[in-house]
Length: 292
Image (tube, rainbow, N blue to C red):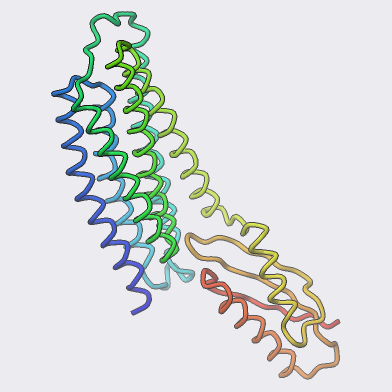
């Protein structure tokens, strides 16, 4: 039942995300067309891309939640990383396309022919910022609750959409004030935000694919927990590696050299239990005993 609960949470959040993004992208596209705003049309494309990215997240979470089998004896958690990498590529492509279209307009020099966006585009930008910020915090909270890297990547996709809408808002405002080229400049700013989000998501997912260690703070906390266990004289070695949304721990502890095997094993079991209890993200902890 516990293994199904994270999937259920991720599916519910993803379905809500798809519904909101579909409605928002259509609203922004219509606002961009009727208000003659290139920045708002670009922003609507970004929102539409969120739908496809969320579908990728749903597939990744479904595969990652499968139980270990003979072919994948350590589980399937890294499928979430694959979903996150695919999401980062989609984000990168979307951002570069938006930036290229904005740069083409800027370098064309034909600023007089750029239509001035209407007030409707301004309203759409404000609505988009509010909705996407809510989606960011809603998805982020769910991702933290079930410790899902793919869902967290989707949350930052929402945040990048919110930031792009802020860029669109600024660009549209300047255009209404008599600087129509700023609508295209805003598209370039949007590109920068999206590309940065794509790079950050890719780096995080790639780190989990190549057995990256935990952050120093987590390692220090684990060290303290191990050293606090009765019978542990010292900690000789502590290795950690990220495996998708989970952590694997290998520890070597020193105990009194003349202890009977059963007592030494009992101390190792206490360390094992303490780590897995204190750190819910730990999927397995291997403890090796050295004689002091």
